[in-house]
Length: 131
Length: 102
Image 1 (tube, rainbow over the protein chains, first blue to last red):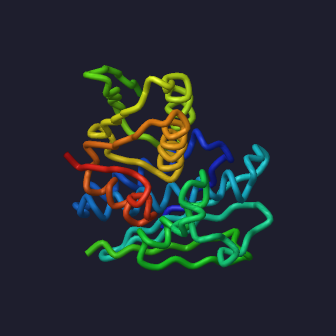
Image 2: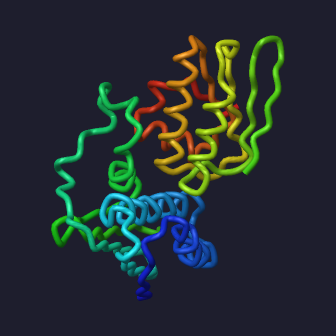
């Protein structure tokens, strides 16, 4: 398991996902699975930095990644006020389709196999099968 | 990230060279905010170089669509990879956009 703490700067987001994507490629994971994990991970980081920590540079995001034989587990935690994912509007409803935001959590839920929120929404734990 | 533009018989074709994600989506939006005018009745954006699009990229494309529509134009997205097209299907944005993998 690799644990890292990232400064709350969305410019660091790509850098943060690079190592995980590289490790999955080296493991020979299917490209479509890597794509789903890539989007899911970066959406979680983006939510943590922008919505969770509200772009506050004094706050940090803690990330844990663990690549197992058949599964990857990713945990992203921010230092914000938390949120209830059930309160988010469904971005696929006709009245929300033209809205600019609101798709990140929805994408995570659809691209990852298991998604769980803890610590009042500050921590998201995601799993994806690699088989 | 670069965007090339050409006009053929009144159709404005833009090719985005690279991904559209959090690292460049404000720049992409700004480019099209400046580019789209009342002359742009038919707009095509070629995304064949985009291996990766995230929710900020999708949001930017929604904003471009709204911009084109505000000028009474039509927008078509072409060259989408199956993976990127999949994101449009998951988020139901395929109902809003005219999209093609060709």
